Length: 458
Image 1 (cartoon, rainbow, N blue to C red):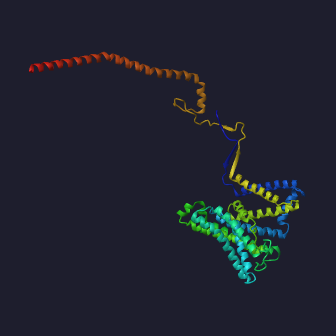
Image 2 (cartoon, rainbow, N blue to C red):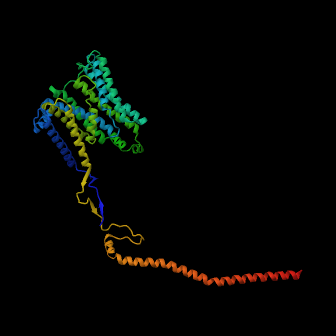
């Protein structure tokens, strides 16, 4: 029997996996990545503290003191707000890559209010103006590419990406304009700072944490339970369907990007007004691009994104402590380890969606089914199964003789019919010739009679 060849590796798409199972796969991928990093760092560090010392330093950098814990929560809240700002646009498949620029513009607007109005106007009024200016600056910076996308169908990815550089150099220009004789760095402003909600680092970080929790809840409800959220999802699935349903696609694009930029501007307000009290070109902390990773890894779900933001900041702060404890002077190692963990986390998504089959059979194939249809014979008279083929192979000589006889009879029949036709033609030939002679004589006698009648009449 013939064998059907199969590849050694075969990939098929899985059925939807239960949530607990997918979470176990992700947890396993992260654990494997952490173990690999621990082995590598403990083996190559100048001041190695061993395999378990790596995990001790990792958790100590994030949870070692109360201050470290609140800093972890503060950075988690900021990153989560930026990611939520981006996911609003991503749900609509508007790829907003300008999160860094929108945050910087919010920072710049807040710093301008503090610089020009601080100490000259009542602090509560300045705080309100700082909030409005930051939100408006971020929204304007996001709505510019939205308008070009809605009316001219420009590439939003390139447009928003280039806007980041414009915002960066605007910040550099204003800092150098305010402090022309300095080193290019802006000192902290002492007027119109937002009040802390307690003592120590907890009081300085609590406002950011509360804002992040409120924004997460609002965005979750907005995307899941409101008409605007439904319109965003529908446009992301199909713009033509949205137009057929009577939705103004241009209006939704502009409205959604205003919201996205406003949330980034809110992050700028928190960075300048509550945390740093100054602005710089690196104030964004590259949160715009890290937020893209958070949104993608969180499947555009605000609740899952909160956990992803916490995990990313945990790795960043923990690896900074690992580098210090193990004697590494470069921060590049921290970035390499974090990138490796990202790679494992993203790679496990493949095994959640797809299933890999290995064919360990000796011949890497399977037998042809017994009831499969084989090729027809040359004369096209019948089609035989595998069992019938074996029987015919046994009786092949007898069938060959019969086939030879049938072919010889077929060739003899045309010859015999041709001979019969020729003999009939030969038998009919004399009769045809006699009839032709009689017809000729009749014509001659009729001509003579006609000639005689003509002579007699004359």
